[in-house]
Amino acid sequence: MENSICTVEQLKKYAELSDDVERKLKRIIQRHPMRITPYYMSLIDWDNPSDPIKKMAVPSLEEFNLEGSYDTSGEAENTKLPGLQHKYSETALILATNRCAIYCRHCF
Image (cartoon, rainbow, N blue to C red; front, top):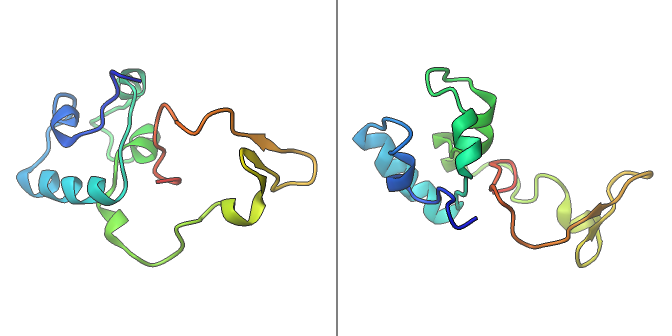
């Protein structure tokens, strides 16, 4: 994870960003961190504005919208023990670590 892309400066090595977008992304990242592995970066089609990997990994200017909930997945309600989430009757999620290799936008 030490090679992860976490700053706008690192992101600019992969994508062209206007000054306005760069400035806004810096503000978003202050509030909602970014972490993308080089492998995920290699999967992004930068010519496709609707690329699903880009939408999942790269902060969106829409993250300035303050409507909604910070706990979109119901994590607080479904955490039964530290490191164990039980949302659906037949499955459970065991969080083996508190560090993710990529910060998906739906979590951050």
